[in-house]
Amino acid sequence: MTEVTKVFFNGPILALDEFGQTVEALATCGDMIAAVGSSAAVLSRPGPKTEAIDLKGRTLIPGFIDGHGHFTETGRNYRFKLDLRSPPLGRIRNLTDLVAAVQKKAAETTPGTWIQGFGYDDTLLDEKRHPLAGDLDSATKDHPVAITHISGHFLAVNTRALEIAGLGAGTADPLGGRLRRLEDGRPSGLLEEHAAEDLVRRHIPWLSEDEEIEAVRTASAVWAARGVTTAQDGSTSGKNLAALLAAAKNEGHLSVRVQLFPDYELAGSGQLPVQSGQFLTPRRKLTIGPTKLFSDGSLQGYTGFLANPYHRVMYDLGPTWRGYPAMDIGLLTEKIKLLHLAGRQVAVHANGDAAIGAVIDAFEAALKIKPVSDHRHLIIHCQTVREDQLDRMAALGLKASFFVVHIHYWGDRHHDIFLGSDRAARLNPLSSAINRDITFSLHNDSPITPIDPLRSVQTAVTRMTLAGKILGPEYRIGVTQALRAVTADAAYLAFEEKRKGRLAPGLLADLVVLNQNPLEISPEKIADIKVLATLVGGQVIYGEL
Image (cartoon, rainbow, N blue to C red):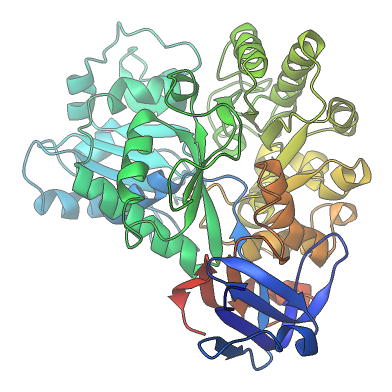
């Protein structure tokens, strides 16, 4: 028999399996879990070279699995772009701060070179508006500038960038996006939704292969420090795939595992397997997940597609503004049908309840053509889903990945500005999903919010906003349920439940050591728990044992 590599003992070990076991000891053999159970049984197995790890009361749990995020994009942002976030995430309080940051970067950058930034939030700036071309022109006219909104659904650019992209008064709005305009019809510098953003993004030079690998290294370190052993790369493009494949050749470049959620073009390119859960690399670092589509935009950007008007509209959009689809609904339905008929799992971004309804309709149409009992199609974010829509999701076997941490970061503004008290209280109704046996994961959608599964767990359990308001306490769930949503249930949604997400023999030894047991402390303190060590395949990639 192969010798045991490591044994962990003397600390609570949360298996997070269907029985909710807390076991006394765990043994690994190479990159797999060899045994879990009583200390007497597990500690009898080691050989002379086995490393014995006394947890000394620390807690061992399965590695966290992020239900949805943008791994490579976050690495690029953190490594190569200006951080323009406002408190509590950053330092930008007003447009003066933002312009000064761009100006400082311009002074250090060769004229003509693109300056990029991420994370500005119009609702947290003193001026309560987006930066426009005129603002960014005051920072530099010698560099094209492109900065991304915190939601990821707006791009603010300067006049130089507009000129390079050839955008003027005669430029028509693309389907699924808009160019915000000045009174004379010229673009103001604010591009709304991906269809409009891409009019500029296509002119921004791509990073070199070495820079892409550095971005992956950066993201790996960030995810590992938060105990995440499986990340997710949402809307993986062909260029993202190339970067990940290059990085995966070296353990030092890609230390965590990554699920690819390919975009529609990559899914149809023939480069990837059809069935979700299949490994793409020898070291089992990359797996294929569902194809990612978009049905609407962002609630805090007023582009999420609602059935009823927004509560308060900060811009000149009219009192009946409900947002709009990011893709023609007929086209969305056709794409979902084609992917489903091809045997692919599908994940669709939908924030507003009108968008969620359109997605449910599309899946229903696809399943009528080809019934499949275990498709695991899912709706990503699913924030304003109604009870009647959850009934339909349950009947169709649809799953969800909820953006519950949105309650923490934006809940107060949803209550006061975007949705009003009633709809804000129903954001991410997790208990309603559990009551219908709808399996779901939780996610951070990094870089929209920082990768932090324990923050997601705390928010799911408390539903507390930054200001201390409790939104919809009846939709809270228990700590064990929330932990499973970032481990076992997240693995199930990606067809990986037989290899990760729980502590059981035969599963990958993807583990996290915490300084406290989340089942035994105040729910309001869960996000303060420290990750002491993260292991992928039994090897420490962060911290120490």
